Image (tube, rainbow, N blue to C red; front, side, top):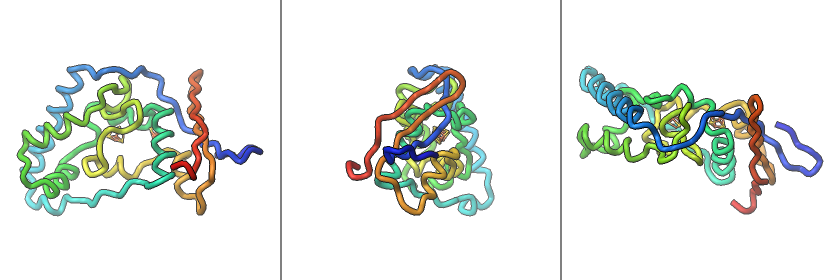
Length: 186
Ligand code: SF4
Ligand code: SF4
């Protein structure tokens, strides 16, 4: 992070290079298969209630605006590992099952499938859309709820939020920059 003379805090994030577009059908099928296997793992658990981890709440207000702007400019560099599974496993699904007891396996699969990004990054997670993650916090793996790249993590740890922020995403020859984000307009 750096603060140039105009008092705009510049937050540096990586830049994912692959294109955005409607997700490949084979990727969606692979994701559904992964969910079926994870639901099977959950059914096999002797104490499924012990698998449940509370979902870490998302940032709020201006912090949420800045994080979303960061992931929008970056387009999912850290989410590449999420690929066609989004790190969802029986622990995530134990939480979802507890929160939505009326949903059966088909309902859970439909819930997730509906959340897949209409325009996803081809080289990142199926849920990394044009404006960041399209999966609601209660449905995400806890890894996703707690991870931030260095630039966003340092911003979230600031004792006092700056009034103005700009995101600069860069990697290799790729450069993307956000407009100046203002705390008082959020
Ligand atoms: S948290 Fe991940 S997707 Fe968001 S800006 Fe950082 S590296 Fe990119
Ligand atoms: S579910 Fe969201 S936060 Fe997790 S890897 Fe996929 S796009 Fe990233």
